Length: 104
Image (cartoon, rainbow, N blue to C red; front, top):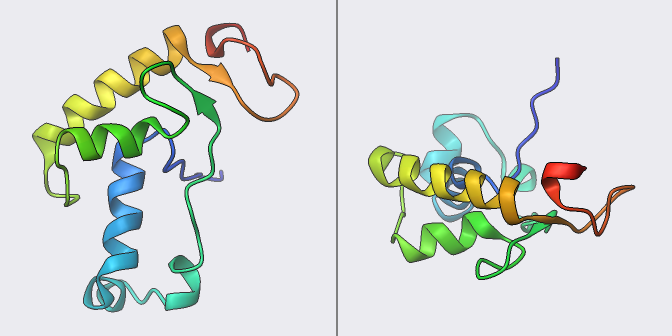
């Protein structure tokens, strides 16, 4: 199957993308070229009141998560982001735009 990355709403994905974008040696470790990560920005998919349209970015900044190794903080961020996203989130794109995530 295909595994997608959703850095706007998944704290693990966001902090990993930032680490790859910010650290050339980290990219080299995994054979990732600049072209694979540098031109990409977070794409908003879900809007959550109080968190904005990039809840993973919001939570990583709020909890000062700077590394994929910050496992405890990432778990906290993920738990809160996923709960709020499901219960309060509004889809911003696609055929379900404007619908609550729990109903989409």
